[in-house]
Length: 227
Length: 48
Image 1 (cartoon, each protein chain N blue to C red):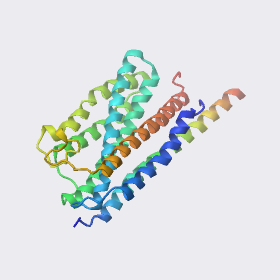
Image 2 (cartoon, chains in turn red, brown):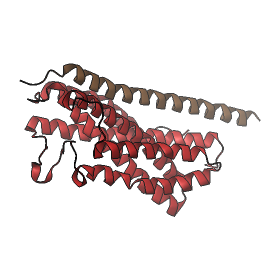
Image 3 (cartoon, rainbow over the protein chains, first blue to last red):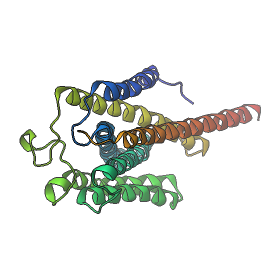
Image 4 (cartoon, rainbow over the protein chains, first blue to last red):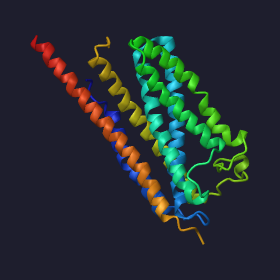
């Protein structure tokens, strides 16, 4: 096992400080939304988790593409790791959205275009692991995994733009011109907490993907896969 | 008057932090297990 890089240790410490820090900022610094009440505060982490999940899936597609052109295993490990971490963030986005929806929409789930495309995206990426586990050689796992990661990335823009392409009840966070029909009107404090949360979740995503890639490398060594 | 949704807020953050913590713990456990296996096979190789 190669020694843990100092930058990764620094990232660990930063995440350990910044994630609780962002939570404190949201709980005690942002105002309570005048209609939805305290549950609106979940929005900051909900959007950040969705952002981190989608970014992960795009990283997986890029890493898959680089693997196909270079055939270097490290890009397969990055692709695999990004998808696993992306699934975790996607799950967080779905669950926190359901908890927000219960008092606001009076239901846990509706087959709204955004919710439906997010669920489909999550299931498609879950199937990535079924595909990998059904293949015997590391080469075929990496090659087909890369192709699958690239093709599946089509669900990311579809999910992101679903609230603009279809009729939906899902709020539009960043509306054109800053004031869409259902856009959140954010105060400066809300905006600060929103961007801090996005930044912190992006850091957390890098940290987790890095750790997961190191694990993938170690597992390949243990299986004697010619690393 | 804002809606009283404090319970949902607490539930929301509990679920978010709970999923993150569970994933980080399972990742740490998998890393530790893989490291132990790596060390074990390195020791075996050096003995033989």
